[in-house]
Length: 456
Image (tube, rainbow, N blue to C red):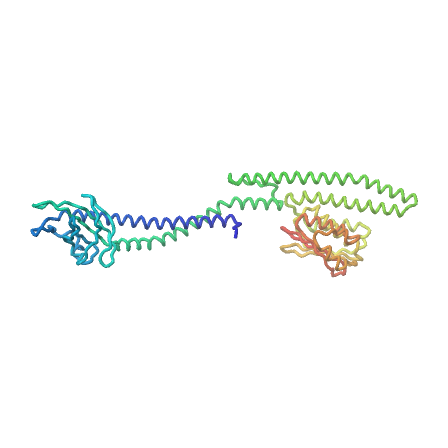
């Protein structure tokens, strides 16, 4: 499984690296402690070895004895773990400490360099593991010199127990240190990635229209990314503006031929061919509506990506209704309006007016006597527009409720206004819903995201 989160990757890497480092440090410290303790034992053995050699003298029987016992009483305690032993150059045992009792240290039959201390390990009594230090010396009795192997040894079990106790005390602290380092790593990762979160919030502010660009200063490593985003936004604005200008030029360029078609239709009507005149006039009107729609789309593409917009729903709605009430169809209708005051929606007033104008114009065309507009305040603004007209069949309601369909091609006489409304909502991330009004006609619902949401 691939880790897609950079934060998780960094935390996993920190966890693995810290764990490996502290485990290695733990074993290293234990080994260092063991080595240090062994050096201390080695120093003690060399002291005992020097003391033993200094107290060694020939006896009257031709052997060797100590002038007095060694300073450590463990040499006199059987199997105490501290031993000494003396052999001649023929590897014959001459004498040993009382602590060895009846045991003999199994020394290797190797040749020693005179005066050099040799260090090695040997098995001892009761399966003890012994650290051994031995040295070859020459003792000068009255007759002739003797080469002797002087050996001292100590049990390593105390060293092993001390090492294990040190490790047992060390590991809990290493675990605590690991936890502290992981918390520090988490904070470091969070702090290191926080500029990316600020970039994300800045991009969200640009997308929502609160800001036009990323204006905050970021760390040197992140600032190039912010600069590139700003350049991308500049390029987008230039592209949108060029497309808008091109669309506007095209639309305005078509208006002259459309005006000529309308004039030709009027001329044909005067010449006595009203059928052809009506066809030409209908064609010119359809093309003009398409041109107007493309102009609206071009404006939406530029405005929807700009700064944040807010519109007073009541103010815009009343203005649209007053305009429709002056039309022949609107002045004959009863308009019922119930919308809370100070209800704002996140939409430019011009686009909100275009949206409500198309929906209310469609309702006024098909209503028999009444158009009802009401809204409910809350986290989302929900506005309903209903009419008492014939409505739209259920099959077509399901079709026009689907995103991406050309509404003006589905229902004659109603589709273009609904299509323009859909274009506006698509530009601002909204959606339309259609149903049966309580008055018997069509109910159209629009959902606007953001600070305020409207349903029509």
